[in-house]
Image (cartoon, rainbow, N blue to C red; front, side, top):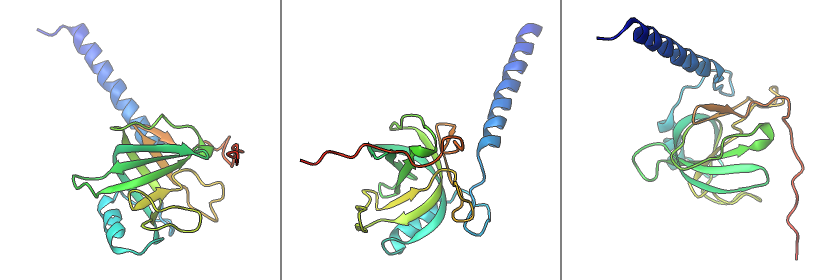
Length: 179
């Protein structure tokens, strides 16, 4: 038989967990399209763009997945690949600019939700090499100028990233020495 104390403790723990989940849901901003509409998570649309659009096609996107590969960080940008389904080609490279706040160290198996700019990346473009995944999502952080660009965000294992308005902005990174 369950005692009254156990029932009270169980109810308290349930209420605490529900409150925490509700608070997290309140922290995740809406993912806005360029027209101001709210975008729901649509992995299939992104996978369709990846196979049907030319290199450098751009659109706003909202995706979710699991990290399946972490690439080396450089110039204050974290790069990793997420899997968005069972098909091995259902992947997308996420590029996060740490100028807009720290994020947990990306590790294989972490859950990711990302809102930002999608780009088909099947060939190099200017100084940017093609993506190993064939497509990227970047600008997954707040925008310092909403008139020019909508904000994005990233949620990594439940932690909202890219919303650090106090410290936002470009940082100086050491340049590699030339020999």
